[in-house]
Image 1 (tube, rainbow, N blue to C red):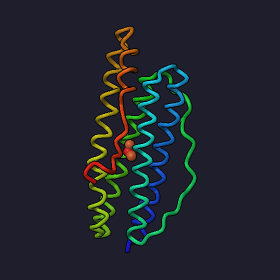
Image 2: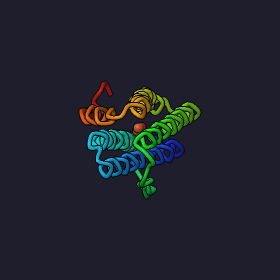
Image 3: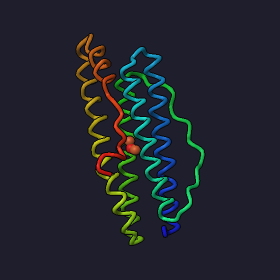
Image 4: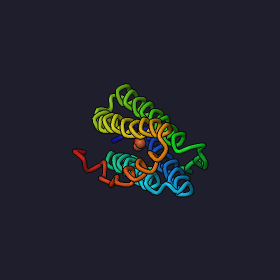
Length: 171
Ligand code: FEO
């Protein structure tokens, strides 16, 4: 049985993961408007990843005999001043999520909830990948700023990304 504090914190994280999906969905819409279908497609896959993260926590709360309580999802930003600014925003957001995951681990330890701690280790590792994949795009876009035409190539490359459920990879 899950403790009340942990249950609330995980419910908050379900909301944060759905908000992540919402931000990336807003970024996908921005990229569609900017005629960058590859960037938009990359963001749509990120939306699927975030939804899978939310559902993984959702299932864990239920499995532990807790109650999932859904709250409103905050409205995400609508516009970014450049594709680089959008991906930089995504990188900052992932760092924020990493901080939240670390706080959840701290709480699991404080509450002596070993099951939650073990469960959250998957997210600790996932956040390393999340930050790296977004940062790689940020670095590429920074280089592209100095090379006209490079944006076209990057957009095409980002459009190659396919969805692999993060919850199926050794979870
Ligand atoms: Fe669910 Fe991008 O962290």
